[in-house]
Structures are given as C-alpha cells and as structure tokens.
Image (tube, rainbow, N blue to C red; front, side, top):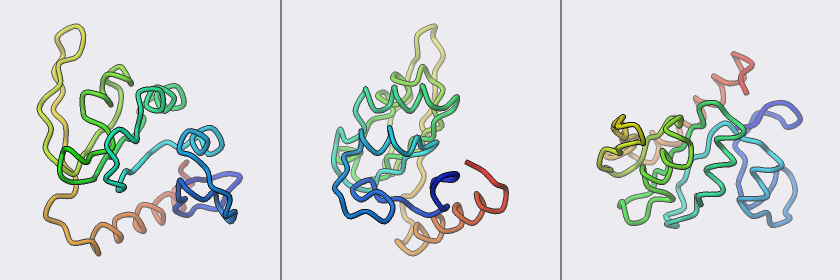
Length: 139
C-alpha cells in the first residue's frame, strides 16, 4: 500500500501503478519507499540483503512478511530480515522459522502469519489493511 503521490491501493512490484513498464523490486523500493513488503511469489531470496537494508533505512520498524510456503520458498529467512534490519523489523512468515539470536544476545521469535488460512482470508486481510490505512491517513 502506498499513500501520498499514489492513491492507496495494492501495488504490484512488477508493474508500477498504471504503467505496464516492467519494474524490478529494487526499482520499486526506490520509487515507492514502502513501509511494508508482503512476499507471495515463492521465490527464495527475492528479498535480498541490500533490499532489506534499504527497507531498514527507510523505516524505523520495516514490516517484512515473506508469506510463501514452504520455508524453502520464502522470499527471505527470519535471520535475513532481523540481521539486515538490526532486529528492528516486524516479521511474520508463512512457514515456521527458528528463533534468531541477535548480536548482544537478544533472541527474537519469528511470528507466523498465514498457515491454514484460505486464500480468500488472505485477500480480505490485504483489502482490510488498505481500508485501515486510508481511514487513519497512514503511510
């Protein structure tokens, strides 16, 4: 979801807004500056270390949701997300990940967001998030 220069609506990382011009994920983050990224592509490694670090530079608490199942298909691991964001990300995945120990000994426990939910519930969550953002003027 993007607010500001663009209307609040889901943005496909492949096509930017009304354009049909192909856009890579790294280009999308530079142009859109998202607060959240939801992965449903089943492309392991799609959220690269550099991408996650850029999310951390843009946001105090970047929201990283690699929801693809199984774990081997997740766009990034919990360790990738917490490591690249210095443990500041809000992380939830579609598959279980082991706890991550951060430098300094702090242990974080990755949340699991979508297992067992029908596709319709997932789409309802995305639509509901958009409506919530518009109602509270979130970004």
